[in-house]
Every structure is written in C-alpha cells, then in structure tokens.
Length: 484
View 1 (cartoon, rainbow, N blue to C red):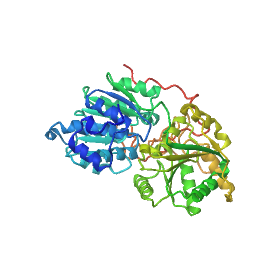
View 2: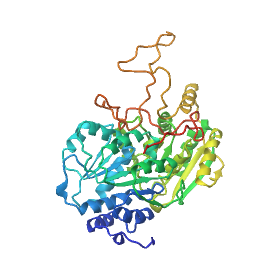
View 3: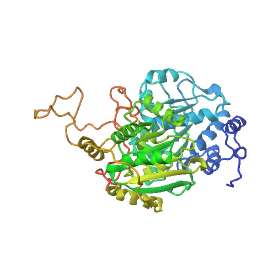
View 4: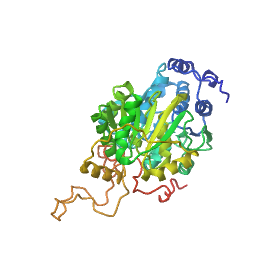
C-alpha cells in the first residue's frame, strides 16, 4: 500500500477515527495498513512485524470496527465475543489499554485477566456482559474450570506474541483453550518472528489464512544505533554505572540474563546514587506495576529487567537499551532492542560483552545479518571492591538458567541440614522430579484432576538458558504441536 494511505481510507468507523485522532496518530504503520483490511474482510491472518511497529492496533482497530456493526444486546455475562491471548501480564495489560484507547467513543466493553492477583475481583467482573477478553492462558483456564467464563460465543481469536507463548511452554494450555472454542471463528495470529514452530502452530489454528510480513525475519529496527563494548564480566557493573552518569541518561532499560542478576545490578546502581528498580517474574504483580509506572514517569532512571518480564513493555520514546548480558537465544536480542526506536523514533542499544559471550554475539549477528560495531571499553571509571562472597554469588547466578529446567530424574526434596547426611521429609503432595512453575502460573490450586494453571507469580521465569544450558543448535527437536 502507498505510504499516503490514511486510517479513513481503511474504512474504519467514525468513533474509531476520532479515537485515533485523539491519540495523535495520522497515518497507519505498514503492518496496520496491510493487516487491517485483511481482518475486516473476515479471513484468518498470520502476521509478523518487528516489535514497536504498531501491530497491536493492527488487530484491535478492525476488531472494534466489526463489533460496532453487531447489536450490543447479544452480549451475555461471562461470554466474550473476542478472545485475545498473550503470554505475559504486562503485555495483557498493554493490549487491553489499547482496546480502551481506541474504543473510548464506543460502548464496547473489555476486561483483562491474568494471574498473580486475587481471582475473586475477576470472577465478579465476569458476571457482567463483556465483548473483548484479554487473558493469559493459565488464568483463563482457571476461570473456565470454575465455570466463570464461557468461550462458546467467541467469534474472533487472537494469539498475540505467539512465538513467546511457545517459548514459555503454553502450547498445552493453548490446545485446551482451542477445544473450548466454537469451530466457526476468525483466527488472527500475530508474532514478532515467523519461526518454523510458529508456522506449525498456524496449521493447527488458521484456515486458508493470508499472510503479512512487513520486515525480514529477525531484522532489527533501522533507527536503532547498535554498539558493543568488550568488557570483562567483573567490571560490567562499574562500567554501566559510569556510562549512565557520564552520558546523563535519564531513562534506560537494562537487560540481564537472570532474576538474581537483575536484583544485584539494581542494588549496585542504587548504591552508586542512581535511581533503579528491578522487574522480573519473582516480583509480585503490584511491585512490577509500580516499578514500571515509576520508570515511565521518570521517578526511576534505570529499569533492570529479564527478557520475559520486559516482553510487552510499551514505553513511548525510550531512548536507551543496554544488554548487560547478551541473551543466549539470539532472537531475544531482537525483542530487547525493539523496546527502543519505536514508532519511527531513534534509539540506542549498547551491549556489554564479556569474552565468554562471543559465541552469543556471533549468533546474534548471524540472525540479524549484520555485524554490530565494536567500540573501545569506556575509560575513567573506578572499580569498586568485590567480596569473595559477591563473586561466588555471581558465578552461581551465571551458571543457572533464569527459568524452569526440564524435569530431572532426581528427588525434588530439599537437602537436610548441612553435615547431617539425611534428607528432610517431603512436604505433603510433593513428588520427585517436580518442575518449577513458569511465569504466568496461577498462585491458586486448580480443581482436582486438572494441571495447575500458569498465570501467576508462582515460579521462576524462563528468560532463556544460561551459559551452561542447551544451545539453540543442541536443543532437542520439539514434538509436533498438532496432530491432524
């Protein structure tokens, strides 16, 4: 489509055009210009666009338009007409905020449900008529099992950030949800990338789908200035603190590989006189919301995050992203630096790379098909003393994955007192080889006979394997997602 196309040219209803104008947008982005007409046509869609290109509006706007054409009297309590599934709490809230922004001049109702919070207010809200339900898979299944929500009236299903949902192991939950939906429905699958696994998933969800891709697979935003500093791991904290202060950065998102590392780095920066907070899956939802809100308002200059916790963070005109540690899953680099340079704005992504991370750097450069410029290490910084205890903690954190490991053939019972040689008794109901829960898992117990849901803050977050975890090349092949 021509770059001169307007939202009015796309045939959107007047209340939506007013909301778009209120939000300050004048022309659709490429993904919006291509996706909106296809969604309005009623067919299934497989769409890919790099993060920050406006793909959320690419499906919320046409969905709102189609709902406006149908009588609101058809709504029933707890029976949504549109279901939007997302992998994380932050992204769920972001998508529903977009629905409210563009639907402000309509009577279309929406609500969001995710874990990590009390389920009772959600249960009460589901007793009212609802048009659009935005949910994480695990908490949605909790409500389905408790008969709080009826999915038999869903007319449109959206899988947003489908690649991340697969990475987080939600495929089993997705299968259960699909079984509760009517066979006749419109399906929209949006993803930052088109991996082979996404295409396999699409075969089990979409029917005669059209396809939209506005960026090459795994490309990075053109307006993001990417640089690398070769820095020893032991000096990264001091150098980062120096860079932030010397550069006068007032808003910078920093990525670490582990939750432990995020906490330690935020504490270090606070000791250096910088305002910093950490955000990851072990934080309560209230703490995560508060940290993000403080960061957006400028009360906190540095937000230290793990990959999954940061997925879905929508921060207008974020100028700086720093990779304190490179991800060992190269696609995550694309998502990380996509937090800056959004909506055509310029941004900067700086990576601090230790010699042990060269293999990760090379893998990243292969998938983005470009070499990232390497600059000399900054000078003028002062090393702070590091105790043996701190160094040991960091080494242990680096050896761990920031997320659940596959179940292993060993007891999950905690060891007994040091030197006792005897194990502690297992807790009631505790078995062997029990895997820790993923981020997104519900804190409440599922009804008897059902697997626990995955939507709360219960367990560690998978933000990728640590240096000692399996590489992409050695990762075992996943089983078929759907057997037709």
